[in-house]
Length: 238
Image (cartoon, rainbow, N blue to C red; front, top):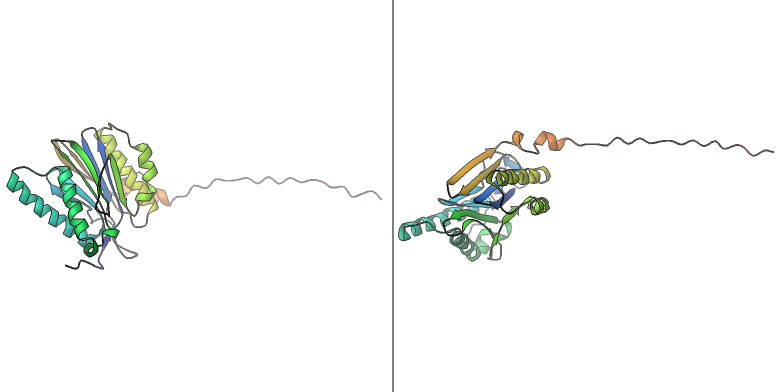
């Protein structure tokens, strides 16, 4: 099957962080077609795979929907067969296997995926699915076109043992910073919080973000005062 599609892209920015009792996933909502912004509010880049495992996706929209649907179908069959949902690691590994075996067909070089969730064995976990067929278990992960601008921020701001509220605020701020510096990121910020109690979804509209459009367009200029020093030069006496 050839899935090389010139279709809308969901590039943008995706983020996943762990905290003391679970994980928080976040993403912007902008969809682009080439250099054009197709939509700024409808796109949802966080897709459910099992009851407590979700995937953040960045890349060709149709291809990523296909990958998510395929993996979710396999996981549903496994849940019926074994009587319990797959673990976070098993889910991430299935995403890795499908993506790696179809690298040429689905343009893996333009895709970014983060699998995050909670299971009763290891609690909250974040896995980054690398392009070369590797899954990396990380305390936090970022991907997408806006990820390079927030790597240093997350490296400094993330702390082990964070509370749920602090983790969600961190994700919202990280995506907001990416929106401020990346043209392919924009719109609202969607978050999914997953822990032992269940799943909670939130959507933060653009005007509620820490760096909303009006604020980031405002440039602060420092007024500099130039002091002119005059020196009197006497003409030489004859």
